[in-house]
Image 1 (cartoon, one colour):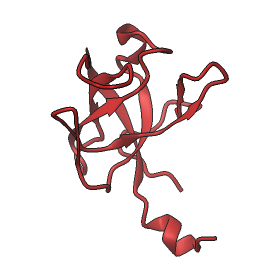
Image 2 (cartoon, one colour):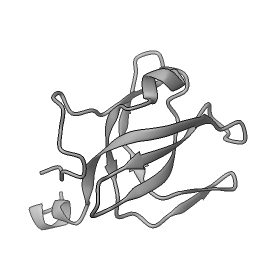
Image 3 (cartoon, helix red, strand yellow):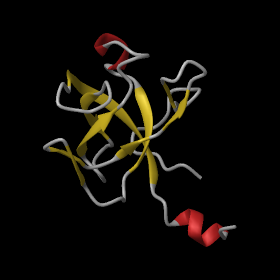
Length: 110
């Protein structure tokens, strides 16, 4: 079990995907994305294993929820700065965690 204070250490924010490209070097079908988290966090890069369930067009301009305070991670030569959150689909793909209504860019999850 964690405490509420532990939960507060994880900085989850809403961002808007502004760039998507294929990531052929990734082990799992993935995209390289740039996400705008607003003026406080800025634009960050991430790799996301969403290629089985989303086209590039479906990813563009989509709001997503991501952890923004993990250290950057090198994924197949690409620096992923944030972790975009998702859950497994029944078919084995990824369903992105999204706000159910249009959210404020950079808004915190609480």
